[in-house]
Amino acid sequence: MSRRSWYVVGVLTVAYTFSYIDRSVLGLMVGPIRAELGISDTQFSLLQGFAFAIFYTLLGIPIAWLADRASRRNIISAGIAVWSLMTALCGLARTFGAMFAARVGVGVGEAALSPAAYSMIADLFPREKLGRALGIYSSGVFIGIGLSFILVGKLIGMLDTVTLPVLGELTPWRLTLIILGVPGLAIAALCFTFREPKRLGVSTGGVPLSDVGAFFGKNASLYVLHFVAFSMLTLLFNAVMAWFGEYLIRIHEMSRGDAGWYIGLIVTFFGGFGIICGGLHADYLKRRGDNGGAIRSSLLAASIVLPLGAGATLMPSGELSLLLLAPLLFFSSWVFAPATTALQLFSPPNMRAQFSAVYLFVVNLTGIGFGGTAVALITDFVFHDDGMLHYSIAITAALSGTLSLLLLWRLLSIYRRGMDERERQIAAESAS
Image (cartoon, rainbow, N blue to C red):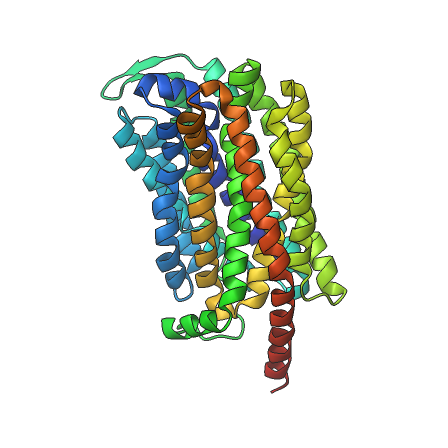
């Protein structure tokens, strides 16, 4: 481990931050986009979640297969360039279909980042320090979401509609998308300032897919429980974050700028700090000899997330809801560093990117793809009332949070046994 390793983590964290700025950018734009495109809550949720998630999840696995064989740095750089350009193109879309296609493009670009980044970071740090490195990288999720709310709230409030040759009339929300998309191109170039790390203990040719499938089959219950449990927590998180800004605006009549500022600060500080604490806690339990520590850490945090997620939008005032949002985001972010740490510690080095991609496929297709849409469907087709948004969020959070707790409790003993066996194998390989 060296300064070079931390520099790579720093650049990747900046990239991850920008990825979440671009994927979360629509959170405060519900009203303007619905009005200009003439769409419903459900259609908006498809732009925000499903359009992004569909190819983000599907392409993650083949890109990860490539990342286990080719330059991870180059794959990451190309992905950043693609999603940045597509974010800017979202601002030029004039129809629901065109914007849906552009959001698909954002997902295509972002599919290149995390599987390759997880694999790269795992080759740069010893196992007992991997949690903190992944925690710092993963903090980009919450820094990016927080900055997205703050920047969108400020930009929409200060920008005026302009008319440009060829591009036509650009309203504030359109200009905001263009402004936030373009800087990612500089981050794509910055990736070329670090070297591709050596893959530890493996050849550069990767392993056959049949070997990956065989390892998965041997450990199917562990992987399935892991993927589904964390997908439920991701669904809860996305259900809250996709609609919390609109909830404050629609139910408590808070201004768009104020909602963005308060949510942005809470997400950035409590979310970013929470995910780092989760990584440190997983490392602490690992050092104490608890091979199930990563899952145990997540289970602890999830038990706190459930009541907070179910109650945050049922408060009588926006101020009280924001007060509950702080611990909700701290503990919901906590779970994600142990989740990725558990996966990287258990998976063989030459399969990490591919298993990371499958993990991201499941959690993002369910969490990002359907978290926001689940809330919108309840609002549109159960309550038939935009004013019942807060109840839709609470119901979605309660159901997904309960499922995650049950699954993590079942996973804990299975994962601990699996890690005990993996540690014995690693020790035997090192001795031979």
